[in-house]
Structures are given as structure tokens and as C-alpha cells.
Image (cartoon, rainbow, N blue to C red; front, top):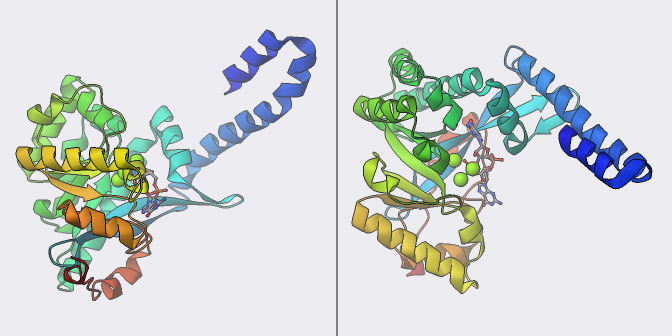
Length: 290
Ligand code: C2E
Ligand code: MG
Ligand code: MG
Ligand code: MG
């Protein structure tokens, strides 16, 4: 954005530059500060995780949760991952941050299992973590240290990771599959240029991007895309999760379409770890809807 500001300044001439640059500079400064604050945040223990339930449509029960990172900035309060994850990807900090997320999430999942709650854990991974080369070793160590079975870990990756043709990424994907962890493809439908990678790589689940769910029940285009994704998944042996489910109308349609897993504010917002055991008692009666 600093570059954009300069470009605008040059392009628009001196008078306009005076008008345009202060706000853009402010934004650029904020980012710069945020980046240096990000470097200290891990050590200062400013990150924490929240967990959002994923509900199995067959049983009406929570069968897994997704770990989502939060940053409590000492001055600015809560900062969204949508804002700081891209920064952390740009400067490589996503590698130690992502490792911290994995460890915390696996620890919590192992603790729940020890309480007799067999929840699976979904963790988001950045493409940058795959390029780093030591991901498999880290995942293996974390599973060993925490005692969590690999089959309970689901790694959420994006199309960017799958389309990265570097040897390190491809090899890491296959090594992790050998470990026995599962892969879920996040935000599906928002970024692909080719679907051939779906046949080449070890996927288990597709997560329909919430922009399509948002269109339900009224937008015919969104419904058509969701139906196509579910039918594609069925023939390829993947399960389907719909994210961003906010109301009962959406639940009904997704149920009619035989979606497997639902996630969204309708069921629960992401919550602190302590709240998860209580939520597990909930049972949604989907039969009543059909
Ligand atoms: P995502 O992995 O697609 O996660 C789903 C996002 O949708 C979360 O936003 C969640 O809070 C939000 N969400 C869930 N249900 C609803 C709903 O019903 N309506 C709406 N409008 N939103 C809903 P959040 O937590 O702000 O995370 C944003 C993104 O940041 C994530 O998207 C993911 O790409 C990234 N992210 C979060 N935590 C991590 C992490 O630990 N590592 C990495 N690499 N990325 C992360
Ligand atoms: Mg995700
Ligand atoms: Mg998503
Ligand atoms: Mg996302």
C-alpha cells in the first residue's frame, strides 16, 4: 500500500498527492507497526485459539471443531486473522505461529479425548508452512508429544497449496498423508483455475466456501454450485462441509442436498476451549426438518 500511495501521488500530481497521501500513509504506518508488533506477539503470549463446532448431519452431533487463531493486541484489542495472517505469511512468521497453533490445538484435542470426548480437530495451514520443508517432522513431533492419534487431525489447506507445484509442497502433502492425517480443502470454489489436482492429491473433505452458502436459500446460482460440488465430491469419494451456515433455511437446503457436515453461527460461533465440553451435549434434531 505504500507503493500504491506513491503511485497515486505521482500519477495525480502534487496537489492531489497532498490530498491522497495522508490517509494511505496512515494505513501503511499501521501495517508497519503491526508487523513489528507481530514479531513480539508469540513470545508475549498475545495469541489464543477459539474453536468452532462442526456438526454431523447424520447424527445431529458435533464430531469435530476447527481451531481459529485470535490476536489480542495490547493497544488495539482483537485483530482479525484475515488481517494479520497475510502479514505473517509475507514475513515468514506464519511458520512459528502456525506451529504454535498446531501444538495448542492438538493438546486441547488430546485433553478432550482423555475426558472421553472423541472430537476430531481441524487446523488451518498456510501454503508457506508447506514450502518450509520441516512441516512433516513438526506434525509428527506434535502428535507424539501430545498423544493425539493422527486420524483425529484434519489439516485445512487451500487451493493455493494444492496448486503449488514445488517438490517440497508435493512431498510434504504425501508424507503427511502417510502419517495418517486427513486433508480438507478450505474455501472451495473461490480460487481454482484447474480441477485436475483433485485427482492427484490425497483429499478427504471439501469445504464449500461460505460465500455460496450465504446465497441460500434465494440465489439459484449459489444452489447450483453447491449441488455441483456435492455431486463431484460424491463421485470422488470426498465428504462435504458447508461453512458459514447462519439460518434454518440454509440448514434445510443443505440437508436436502445431502451435505455431510455443517459449520456456522447457526450452530455456534467460535468459542473458548473451556466451553467445548458443554456444547457436546447438544443434539440437533435434523429428522424433524425433513
Ligand atoms: P476459514 O478457515 O475459512 O475459517 C472460517 C471463518 O469463517 C472464520 O473466520 C469463522 O469465524 C468465520 N465463520 C464461521 N461461521 C460463520 C458464519 O456463520 N458466518 C460468517 N459470516 N462467518 C463465519 P476467522 O476466525 O475470522 O478466520 C478467518 C480466516 O483466517 C480463516 O478462514 C483462515 O483462512 C484464517 N485463519 C484463522 N486461523 C488460522 C490459523 O490458525 N492459521 C492459518 N494459516 N489461518 C488461519
Ligand atoms: Mg478453515
Ligand atoms: Mg473457509
Ligand atoms: Mg479462509
